[in-house]
Image (tube, rainbow, N blue to C red; front, side):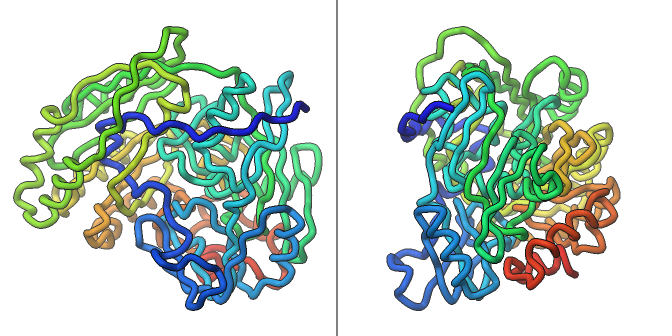
Length: 461
């Protein structure tokens, strides 16, 4: 394998008008403002939406695998790893020790023949695109938020859109896992297979990833088109065109009768000029106005076509697939069997309309290919993922309580980094390899050192 070039920082591109509806505060912080030193009590952590907070006894910032092993061995349990702080669910919160992977970043090696690359687990997804382009490679797919760490994105089975494209977890070929005693285990389809199948989506409950190797492809460009339509036309396009495009997804505004369809396909055409990034002030104003004056919500949603223009552009895959975000929200996402996805979307959309729940952000709908990771929402079946978002200044609980039972009706599986209320009993019913995962978890961490209260609910409750 060849030595890597030093990764460069990707330029922020124009904020896709629709994806702006699904914005986040850029970056995410490990500590609250003014909390600069890990040894200055009280330690505080929050995720980027502000919905999850913790005051751990200790925080550690290892910059090598040796330092990571030492940090694990000396840590006060429960131990939780943090990457980009982009999860909505309480996967990080702990009274024990938070171990940041931020300093464990960058490409370790790449294989031009196999088109694979190994990265340290703390590498932000945004940094992989330019680094891979420099060696002639590109990720097979990418989610529309790219500020997560690779370790976090893989551990929660984060994904993009594409009927034939897998999540980040499904494209992992090798990984290195540091377990409860500080020892490292190397895993692949040929080595420690059970641990490999469990660790690719483990929600931080088996140990801490230090390195991951991803299957990639030749670097490529995409042509993206964005079109505004009515909801029924958008859903019909999704049904008719899902096999014709490499990527297709729709964003449905429940009260405006409007939707946006985004299509992307590989092209060899020259890149189009870069448009300056949108700061999303209009979106923030519209969402806050709908929060304060609910009667304006449907009216503003019907005007989507006036402030979101149809557009087309060409660029590097990592520039087109990912979107900078500036407006914070909280999110629930479930994945249902692909063949029932649009039926489920229609029920969620109509239920929100009938209930009159005040929500400005659209529903997001996309397809992802099946994989063989035991706890992937796409394990052994292709999936249709439906994301529900609520503006961060609003209470998300009424909306999420309303729609979550609909997802259960369709045998939905939750995105591990997003809000849901399932316990081990519920999860066993929708994950065919759930008990196999629990067996491996007990073998690797018999004392439960990596189980915070949320993980206990998932894997013991």
